[in-house]
Amino acid sequence: MKNNSMYKKIACALVLANTLTVFGVTGCNSNEDPASTGATGTPEVTEAPFISTDELFGAGDKEYFVPFQNPETSYCSISEGWAVPVRSQGMGGCYCYSAVSSMQTEYMKEHGELPDLNPDDIIYRIYGVTETSEDGEPQYPDEKYYISSGLETDLGGDAFQVTGALCADPLNGYVIEETNIYGSYNTDYLDFDKITEEGIKDAVRENGGVCICVSYKKDCKYVNGYYTQNYQNNDVDPDHIALVVGWDDDFPADCFKTPASRNGAWLVQNSFGVFWGNCGYYWVSYDMPIPNIYSCSITGEYSSAISFGRNVYASVYSADLIEKVLSGKAVDSITLDEVLASDDVAAATVYDHKGTVGAVGFWTTVPGQSYTIEIRQGEFGKVLASASGTFEYTGYHTVEFEKPVSVNKFTVVVKTAGSAFFEGQATDDYNAFTVYQKIPGHYEAKSQPGRSFIQIGEDWIDVTDPELMNRLGLDKLPPELQEEVSMPGDPCITVLFK
Image (cartoon, rainbow, N blue to C red; front, side, top):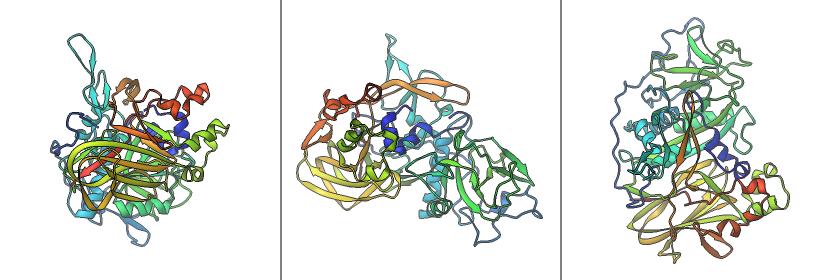
């Protein structure tokens, strides 16, 4: 996915949109009736989940090592009763398969039941194959990513796309509640987002599983019956996403093709079926660098939702951050503290829909970013409800109001310190990746005048205003940076109805 490189360097969370990878190489939005009544999905037929870790390691040399023997130094969500099926993804789609496993594991932990979600349903919301009119012109009826040929399930993607596809159209009654981007582990891959070994363990305990970027076959080997990996270039050469569901601090350091410097490994659930690895699982050394780690969770508490800007494709930065760049400060020298201390970026969308608002979903672009949400009557009228705070991690978050708000026509304002995510504009400058090739594609976005706004000074400026980039001061950027700037489109805000 092509994102503005200047903005990417300022808000390093956006690196994830460019580099999350899938097997091999690397939301539908209707403007006619944006409040969905709840989409249904295709039932998925999978084998029952494993209920004990003992089932996984029949080939393991028990005289050499038996996993999960010491509860003080090991943990596994399977043993807690939160196991989900091991799927077989086929050619591509690991980004979606692992995300669904993350959603299901967290939901099992919280609710004790397995939600029925088919990853392919989400993939088809993200991607479409271009159709043509009678005169041969390409048709893009929905806001999504289009390819001219091939299969959508062969394509790569990322957590941003999964979140966009599931934030506003319920799938079997479920929408995305949160996507937490924890960052990188054992590497300097991301500047702002970092997570420690203990942080990963806490996240697995909290969510039941976390997604990680790996190289799907580099440095993998069966050692004493355990399938393992300790690929030391994983931070620069990942091509797959899988799910950490546990760990064992006592897993032997010599049980890897490349021996580790210490004992300890993550138990990882893959999406290549039960005949791969140890019944679909394998062990990744604590030594292995991991460039991106995140989790996704879902909720079934909302009946419908509206989001005009579902796909994260562009960003807007505060005037004081832009001024730093215009004054000569190197983009990659801007620190997290400077972003967090910057002025707010205030975005707003006006909705003409009757209902009861229960929550608002939106993105934070850096860890610890402060936010304020307001629901205003009519077009920028009196404040009916508000909420503010911070989130520990970069990601998509749902803020529920203490009292649901009855609305007809209303405005939602979201203010975040330093930067905010937007959907961007339609473009043919997009590439989708399969195992074997790069496929040129089209990204479709459909902004409309009078719907979405950015605050500049005291004024609310329509995002379709042709003078918007000049009003933001971006016309003063050096030519090489101006080439990267595009119209922001609708802000990525979701309104969820009870």
